[in-house]
Image 1 (tube, one colour):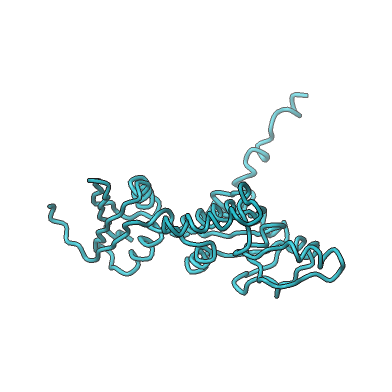
Image 2: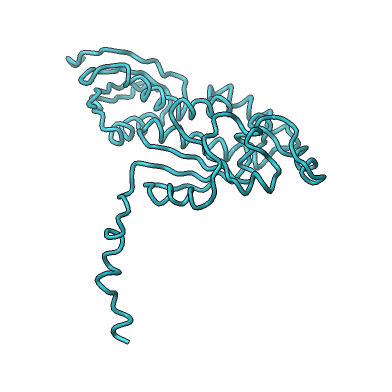
Length: 177
Length: 79
Protein backbone atom coordinates (compact mmCIF):
# COMPACT_ATOMS: atom_id res chain seq x y z
CA UNK A 1 0.00 0.00 0.00
CA UNK A 2 2.62 2.46 1.06
CA UNK A 3 4.56 1.75 -2.06
CA UNK A 4 1.52 2.41 -4.25
CA UNK A 5 0.60 5.74 -2.67
CA UNK A 6 4.10 7.15 -2.57
CA UNK A 7 4.94 8.87 -5.82
CA UNK A 8 8.11 7.45 -7.23
CA UNK A 9 10.95 9.91 -7.78
CA UNK A 10 10.62 9.16 -11.46
CA UNK A 11 6.93 10.26 -11.52
CA UNK A 12 7.67 13.38 -9.51
CA UNK A 13 10.34 14.42 -11.95
CA UNK A 14 8.35 13.68 -15.06
CA UNK A 15 7.35 17.19 -16.16
CA UNK A 16 10.98 18.23 -16.31
CA UNK A 17 12.36 14.86 -17.34
CA UNK A 18 9.93 14.46 -20.24
CA UNK A 19 11.99 17.00 -22.12
CA UNK A 20 8.96 19.19 -22.73
CA UNK A 21 9.87 22.81 -23.38
CA UNK A 22 8.81 25.29 -20.73
CA UNK A 23 5.66 27.20 -21.69
CA UNK A 24 6.70 29.54 -24.46
CA UNK A 25 5.23 32.97 -24.97
CA UNK A 26 2.35 31.47 -26.92
CA UNK A 27 -1.41 31.80 -26.86
CA UNK A 28 -3.64 29.13 -28.37
CA UNK A 29 -7.31 29.92 -28.90
CA UNK A 30 -10.03 27.49 -29.85
CA UNK A 31 -12.85 29.35 -31.60
CA UNK A 32 -15.97 27.18 -31.55
CA UNK A 33 -18.54 29.94 -31.63
CA UNK A 34 -19.82 31.56 -34.80
CA UNK A 35 -21.54 34.41 -32.98
CA UNK A 36 -20.44 37.92 -33.89
CA UNK A 37 -19.89 38.98 -30.27
CA UNK A 38 -17.76 35.98 -29.41
CA UNK A 39 -15.74 36.09 -32.63
CA UNK A 40 -15.24 39.80 -31.97
CA UNK A 41 -13.86 38.99 -28.51
CA UNK A 42 -11.64 36.26 -29.96
CA UNK A 43 -10.04 38.56 -32.57
CA UNK A 44 -9.70 41.39 -30.03
CA UNK A 45 -7.81 39.14 -27.61
CA UNK A 46 -5.75 37.65 -30.44
CA UNK A 47 -4.67 41.03 -31.81
CA UNK A 48 -3.97 42.35 -28.31
CA UNK A 49 -1.86 39.32 -27.49
CA UNK A 50 0.04 39.52 -30.78
CA UNK A 51 0.66 43.23 -30.18
CA UNK A 52 2.06 42.30 -26.77
CA UNK A 53 4.60 40.02 -28.41
CA UNK A 54 2.83 36.68 -28.02
CA UNK A 55 2.90 34.00 -30.68
CA UNK A 56 -0.83 33.47 -31.31
CA UNK A 57 -2.61 30.59 -33.02
CA UNK A 58 -6.38 30.52 -33.51
CA UNK A 59 -7.89 27.09 -34.08
CA UNK A 60 -11.33 27.37 -35.71
CA UNK A 61 -13.79 24.56 -35.34
CA UNK A 62 -17.49 23.95 -36.11
CA UNK A 63 -19.43 27.25 -36.21
CA UNK A 64 -16.18 29.11 -35.67
CA UNK A 65 -15.26 28.19 -39.26
CA UNK A 66 -17.70 30.89 -40.39
CA UNK A 67 -15.13 33.47 -39.28
CA UNK A 68 -12.60 32.17 -41.86
CA UNK A 69 -14.99 31.09 -44.59
CA UNK A 70 -15.42 32.55 -48.06
CA UNK A 71 -18.97 33.60 -48.87
CA UNK A 72 -20.05 30.91 -51.32
CA UNK A 73 -22.21 27.85 -51.69
CA UNK A 74 -20.78 24.62 -50.36
CA UNK A 75 -21.89 21.09 -49.60
CA UNK A 76 -22.22 17.91 -51.62
CA UNK A 77 -25.06 15.98 -50.00
CA UNK A 78 -28.61 17.27 -49.51
CA UNK A 79 -27.85 18.14 -45.87
CA UNK A 80 -24.56 19.72 -46.85
CA UNK A 81 -26.29 22.00 -49.37
CA UNK A 82 -29.02 22.80 -46.82
CA UNK A 83 -26.37 23.66 -44.22
CA UNK A 84 -24.68 25.90 -46.77
CA UNK A 85 -27.78 28.12 -46.79
CA UNK A 86 -27.29 28.81 -43.09
CA UNK A 87 -23.49 29.00 -42.94
CA UNK A 88 -22.41 32.63 -42.91
CA UNK A 89 -19.12 34.37 -43.59
CA UNK A 90 -17.55 36.92 -41.24
CA UNK A 91 -19.84 39.70 -42.49
CA UNK A 92 -23.03 37.74 -42.01
CA UNK A 93 -22.69 36.36 -38.50
CA UNK A 94 -24.98 37.87 -35.88
CA UNK A 95 -24.66 38.45 -32.13
CA UNK A 96 -25.63 35.65 -29.73
CA UNK A 97 -28.34 37.86 -28.25
CA UNK A 98 -30.61 40.47 -29.84
CA UNK A 99 -29.94 39.32 -33.38
CA UNK A 100 -33.65 39.70 -34.25
CA UNK A 101 -33.25 38.23 -37.71
CA UNK A 102 -30.27 40.38 -38.66
CA UNK A 103 -31.55 43.66 -37.19
CA UNK A 104 -29.29 43.31 -34.16
CA UNK A 105 -26.30 42.60 -36.37
CA UNK A 106 -27.00 45.79 -38.30
CA UNK A 107 -27.50 47.78 -35.07
CA UNK A 108 -24.23 46.57 -33.55
CA UNK A 109 -22.35 47.33 -36.78
CA UNK A 110 -23.71 50.90 -36.62
CA UNK A 111 -22.76 51.22 -32.95
CA UNK A 112 -19.28 49.85 -33.58
CA UNK A 113 -18.77 52.36 -36.36
CA UNK A 114 -20.02 55.18 -34.10
CA UNK A 115 -17.46 54.22 -31.49
CA UNK A 116 -14.68 53.82 -34.06
CA UNK A 117 -14.15 50.16 -33.28
CA UNK A 118 -12.83 48.14 -36.23
CA UNK A 119 -15.26 45.92 -38.12
CA UNK A 120 -14.81 42.16 -37.88
CA UNK A 121 -13.09 41.84 -41.30
CA UNK A 122 -10.74 44.71 -40.35
CA UNK A 123 -9.99 43.07 -37.00
CA UNK A 124 -9.29 39.75 -38.75
CA UNK A 125 -6.96 41.48 -41.22
CA UNK A 126 -5.21 43.20 -38.31
CA UNK A 127 -4.67 39.78 -36.73
CA UNK A 128 -3.15 38.52 -40.00
CA UNK A 129 -0.89 41.58 -40.22
CA UNK A 130 0.29 41.02 -36.64
CA UNK A 131 1.27 37.44 -37.49
CA UNK A 132 -1.62 35.56 -35.86
CA UNK A 133 -1.84 32.06 -37.34
CA UNK A 134 -5.16 30.53 -38.38
CA UNK A 135 -5.78 26.80 -38.28
CA UNK A 136 -8.95 24.97 -39.28
CA UNK A 137 -10.28 21.77 -37.77
CA UNK A 138 -10.08 18.91 -40.26
CA UNK A 139 -13.02 16.96 -38.84
CA UNK A 140 -15.33 19.99 -38.83
CA UNK A 141 -14.49 20.63 -42.48
CA UNK A 142 -15.38 17.02 -43.33
CA UNK A 143 -18.62 17.01 -41.34
CA UNK A 144 -19.79 20.38 -42.66
CA UNK A 145 -18.72 19.49 -46.23
CA UNK A 146 -16.33 22.38 -46.58
CA UNK A 147 -13.08 22.21 -48.51
CA UNK A 148 -9.81 24.04 -47.91
CA UNK A 149 -10.68 26.26 -50.89
CA UNK A 150 -13.87 27.37 -49.12
CA UNK A 151 -11.73 29.02 -46.44
CA UNK A 152 -9.85 32.31 -46.77
CA UNK A 153 -6.31 32.03 -48.14
CA UNK A 154 -4.78 33.27 -44.85
CA UNK A 155 -5.59 29.94 -43.17
CA UNK A 156 -2.22 28.26 -42.69
CA UNK A 157 -3.10 24.71 -41.81
CA UNK A 158 -5.92 22.23 -41.61
CA UNK A 159 -5.13 20.10 -38.59
CA UNK A 160 -6.54 17.71 -36.02
CA UNK A 161 -6.79 17.66 -32.27
CA UNK A 162 -3.29 16.29 -31.63
CA UNK A 163 -1.64 19.17 -33.49
CA UNK A 164 -3.81 21.69 -31.63
CA UNK A 165 -3.05 20.03 -28.28
CA UNK A 166 0.68 20.03 -28.97
CA UNK A 167 0.49 23.79 -29.46
CA UNK A 168 -1.74 24.21 -26.41
CA UNK A 169 0.73 22.28 -24.24
CA UNK A 170 3.51 24.64 -25.26
CA UNK A 171 1.39 27.73 -24.61
CA UNK A 172 1.28 30.06 -21.65
CA UNK A 173 -2.44 30.55 -22.12
CA UNK A 174 -5.20 28.60 -23.83
CA UNK A 175 -8.64 30.06 -24.43
CA UNK A 176 -11.83 28.41 -25.60
CA UNK A 177 -14.39 30.73 -27.12
CA UNK B 1 7.58 69.52 -18.89
CA UNK B 2 10.21 66.88 -18.32
CA UNK B 3 13.37 66.74 -20.30
CA UNK B 4 12.60 63.57 -22.26
CA UNK B 5 13.40 63.87 -25.92
CA UNK B 6 10.47 62.68 -28.05
CA UNK B 7 11.25 61.00 -31.35
CA UNK B 8 7.74 60.22 -32.56
CA UNK B 9 4.22 61.27 -31.62
CA UNK B 10 1.02 59.28 -31.98
CA UNK B 11 -2.58 60.46 -31.89
CA UNK B 12 -4.75 57.65 -30.51
CA UNK B 13 -7.67 59.82 -29.48
CA UNK B 14 -11.11 58.33 -30.08
CA UNK B 15 -9.75 54.81 -30.55
CA UNK B 16 -10.88 51.93 -28.37
CA UNK B 17 -9.25 48.65 -27.32
CA UNK B 18 -7.40 46.89 -28.90
CA UNK B 19 -6.36 49.63 -31.37
CA UNK B 20 -4.21 51.84 -29.06
CA UNK B 21 -2.09 48.83 -28.06
CA UNK B 22 -1.88 47.57 -31.66
CA UNK B 23 -0.81 51.01 -32.92
CA UNK B 24 1.81 51.25 -30.17
CA UNK B 25 3.13 47.80 -31.06
CA UNK B 26 3.43 48.84 -34.71
CA UNK B 27 4.94 52.24 -33.92
CA UNK B 28 7.58 50.96 -31.51
CA UNK B 29 9.18 49.02 -34.38
CA UNK B 30 9.64 52.25 -36.34
CA UNK B 31 11.89 53.90 -33.75
CA UNK B 32 15.36 52.88 -32.65
CA UNK B 33 16.17 51.37 -29.26
CA UNK B 34 16.46 54.20 -26.73
CA UNK B 35 14.06 56.47 -28.61
CA UNK B 36 10.75 57.68 -27.15
CA UNK B 37 7.20 57.69 -28.50
CA UNK B 38 4.75 60.15 -27.05
CA UNK B 39 1.04 59.55 -27.51
CA UNK B 40 -2.36 60.91 -26.56
CA UNK B 41 -5.52 58.85 -26.14
CA UNK B 42 -9.06 59.17 -24.80
CA UNK B 43 -10.02 55.55 -24.06
CA UNK B 44 -9.88 55.25 -20.22
CA UNK B 45 -8.75 51.62 -20.67
CA UNK B 46 -5.42 52.94 -21.91
CA UNK B 47 -4.49 53.91 -18.32
CA UNK B 48 -4.24 50.20 -17.46
CA UNK B 49 -3.47 48.79 -20.90
CA UNK B 50 -0.37 50.74 -21.87
CA UNK B 51 1.46 50.07 -18.55
CA UNK B 52 0.50 46.37 -18.92
CA UNK B 53 1.71 46.35 -22.52
CA UNK B 54 5.02 47.91 -21.45
CA UNK B 55 5.50 45.25 -18.74
CA UNK B 56 4.73 42.37 -21.13
CA UNK B 57 6.85 43.62 -23.99
CA UNK B 58 9.70 44.93 -21.83
CA UNK B 59 9.45 48.56 -22.94
CA UNK B 60 9.86 51.44 -20.52
CA UNK B 61 6.86 53.56 -19.55
CA UNK B 62 8.43 56.99 -19.06
CA UNK B 63 5.21 58.59 -17.82
CA UNK B 64 1.44 58.42 -18.10
CA UNK B 65 -0.94 61.18 -17.04
CA UNK B 66 -4.64 61.86 -17.39
CA UNK B 67 -6.11 65.30 -17.57
CA UNK B 68 -9.61 66.35 -18.64
CA UNK B 69 -10.25 62.95 -20.19
CA UNK B 70 -7.09 63.02 -22.27
CA UNK B 71 -4.41 60.50 -21.44
CA UNK B 72 -0.88 61.29 -22.50
CA UNK B 73 2.02 58.93 -22.12
CA UNK B 74 5.55 58.35 -23.25
CA UNK B 75 7.20 55.00 -23.93
CA UNK B 76 10.89 54.38 -24.48
CA UNK B 77 11.90 51.49 -26.71
CA UNK B 78 14.17 49.24 -24.63
CA UNK B 79 14.35 46.24 -26.96
